[in-house]
Length: 245
Image 1 (cartoon, rainbow, N blue to C red):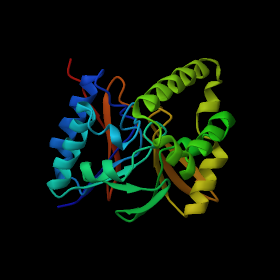
Image 2 (cartoon, rainbow, N blue to C red):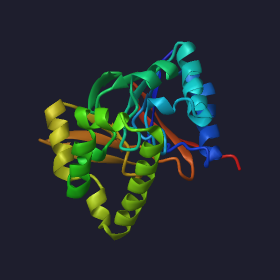
Image 3 (spheres, one colour):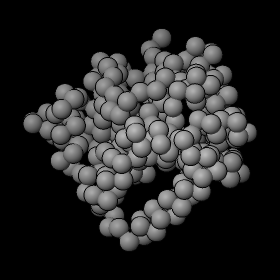
């Protein structure tokens, strides 16, 4: 029987949005059980303050649902996003997931495919890229994780509020991917396909790089509906999941 692999990103799960959480649990208990693998390409959570927050009941429930899928023999891979870059080994062990780097290159049924969260492609947003470089430094994360969990939660909430205010005044194009960055990624990785999230602009884009056709799939966010990408030997398909009210 032909295999397939599933991809999701930007679910932004939180206890305040139960419909998205239930849709994700349905995916884990249903279609994902038939897949070769599930890849989560960042921003699974609205925010992640550190693996010492695993004791919080909502976070524990998400980890347990992922662990159930992994225990069923399905490979689950997790790539950190800009909201959950503090996900580390403790969460990975609890959830039964394998952490992967950004970018990661896979052979997807014969198609060399680059997997990213997508924020590294948004190079026109200079302010964000400077912030990303700072918070992704290992020494910065080590120092941050030495602070009390309550402090980190407050810091993240404040950072989110500032980010939302900045989005209102930034030009829309600045927050999308840069065409040169996309072409560079195709060339650097020798890939025929890119799959990423982050921009919340789900679509299939066709690119011609050095005379060769390539494709780029942008995954959907889960704020108003669920969606996953199903990849098989004959190509990719975006599949909708209706939220239950």
